[in-house]
Image (cartoon, rainbow, N blue to C red; front, top):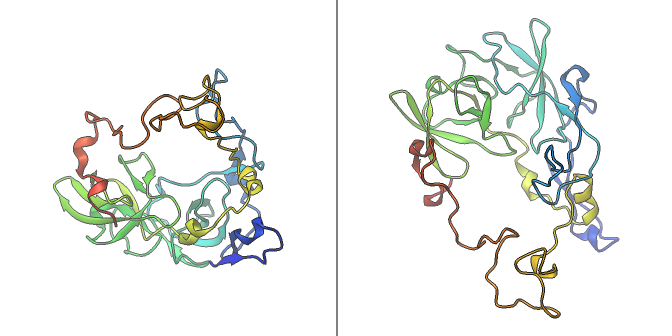
Length: 279
């Protein structure tokens, strides 16, 4: 995949960069693997906004992704690589030998015609194959990792991300997460070999407001530009900082305050904090 730039015939066009989508082999999704997707505007069941700056955007259909990879010991062939508007990675359509079709997150290097398989034992260490962590050698890059066996992939699912297997001890496997955090995960959890594709996604630039609205992101207003009733930094005469400490709309200091809970039930599984080093 390459990044496209454009002739700057408008000021915003100068900064726009997009993907060339040359890796996409099929434009329309598999209809049996999609469902309708209603927009919420980030509001809950009472109408209260839970996340700011979300709303509008193009209409989408949700692609049902197989995050469990629970069809064991049945080979599948990659029939297409497709765009998914709901995520920044590509998705691959698998066609199993028994005729069933499923979507998976497309790893880097997966091509049309490639054969992939998932299972508990005797599975080749090959890009796209899924197996328990205990069956994967140390040092291997993996993605789509389960947190608990059978729950489905939760870690390392976005474009270009991967984790590395550092070692095995007892019933746990130590992983180096994309953030640099070292974490223990149960050895029976499934993972897929390889890295998630579309790794150049983070180098694209929106360039103008319209493209952000198209994907459902609304404008963000500075707190200092609001009224005092709307934000802790708001109010004042003209452009005024008012000697205020930077804070969130809920009055929480936003520079340097540690917000991670120390007594979380899973914290003992973190071997090394993500701030100590990165991949």
